[in-house]
Length: 265
Image (tube, rainbow, N blue to C red; front, side, top):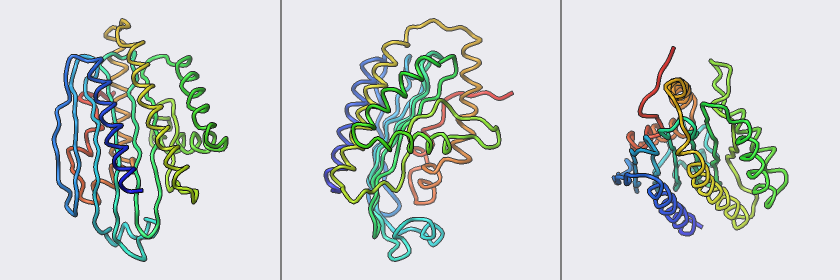
C-alpha cells in the first residue's frame, strides 16, 4: 500500500501543478526539503496573476513520535515509530470572486494504519449558488462509495473548520475525515483517490468560470478580511500545522497555507 499511495499522491501533484499553470502566467517554483527523521518532501509555490499565492506540497517521512504525541496517535504507545505520506494544497486567488481552496490527504502507519484528509472552500463574496453546487457534487462523489460518508464527513468538516473565538465558520465547508480505516484498504484508497480527483476538477472549473469576473476595491477589502480569519484558524487550530511542526517538518512548507496579504479590523 505504501508504494501505491505515495505514487498516486505524486501523480495528483503533477496534475494539479499542470492545471493551475495552464490558467496562470507564472510557473510553480519547486524546493525539496529533508525531514529531521528520514525522508522529506517537495514544496511547489506559485505567485501569479490568477493564484496570488498557492502551494502544492507532497512529502514522505518517517521517524518516532515524541512522548507527547504518543498519547494521542493511534498505535504510537505500542511503538512510537511512524511512516507517513501526503499531499497538501492551498490556493489563494488574486480575484476575490474565486474562493480560497484547501485540500489534503495523507496515509499514516504506526502499529495501525489509516487515511485522513478532506477539502474546504473559503469564499469572501456572495457564494450561495456556487456553494450548493459544490456540496451537491461532493455528495454525489461520496455517495458512490458510501451514503453515510457525506453527512458524516461534512459534519466533521463544519465542526473542524469553525473559528471558536470568532464564533463563525472559516468558509462554506466541504468534507473532513481522519483515522479512516474500514478494514478494506483497496476501497478506502479508492475513496481517497476520488476525493483528490474531485478537488482537481473543482479547481479547474471554478477558476475557469470566475477568474475574469470583475471586482473592485470593496471586494478586495472583504477578501483580505476573510484571509485574516484564515490565518487565525491555521495558526490556532489546524491539526496539520501542529502535526508538521511537532514532528520536525519543514516550516516553510507547513506555513505555505497562509495568504500573502491579510487584514484585520
